[in-house]
Length: 318
Image (cartoon, rainbow, N blue to C red; front, side):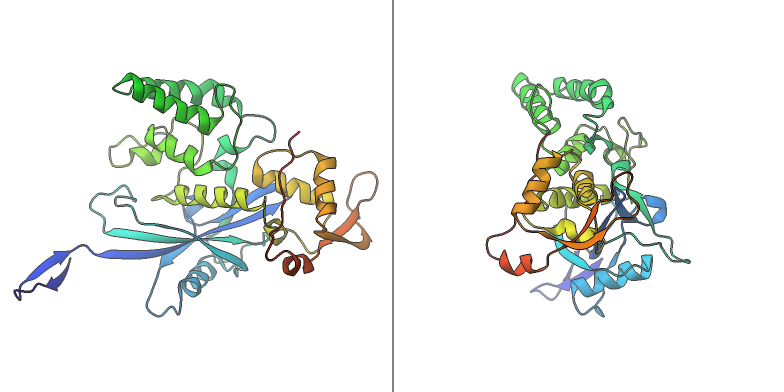
């Protein structure tokens, strides 16, 4: 406990507050979305903000490179998490986490680093709808959510709970909204269906599939996933994840991997062409099956041309 003087010359105790910097570092490889993790996949790269750091971003870059050996490229601040009891330990000091979203390409983690790339759908398996809704949503998750809704103390609260479940998980013939990643995670937390909700009471069991993370790192990851799913629809950030040259099919698969939804091939290509986001390199991909595919590159001039108006990259539905 720290002490601060009062007007009477006495002192009073105040809670110590710590500040951590946390990175959600994303890559897409062969149509598989990945995140950089440490501690055996149970945590995101992070470290405390120190007075020697010139800025928050400088501190974050230093910690990520020290833990992973991976330099950071594109980076934007994500959110500041300051709720009490975020670690699940009521006796722990009050801490805040300042999170950042980084986009990069997957590189081999160097020797001597404990970091590795993990599939983000290992943590959120209910978010991958590229092959339709995962069967466990109907078989396992929906009955549990119904039971939780019915456990409310009053009929109005029961209806309110179920309406939230139906909206966030696309139940009762509602559409699935891929951007509600954080709302779905927090609903599962509130319903006690994931291990993070039961820490400290000796019942850290998982009712639904999905790998837990330390403290509230999975909540931070959900925030990053939601931000990225929304952002790819209006800014060309997906190209931060692409190699310098790529086929249009590789680009489409990357967008689908991030969104967890399939897109209509012809409509997608028409959108890319109309918005003049890419240009041909004049080369052909050598490793494609069947007919060789043209190689493209991102047209960087689009960033200056669309700086004010923005760039649409909407998901097309099948």
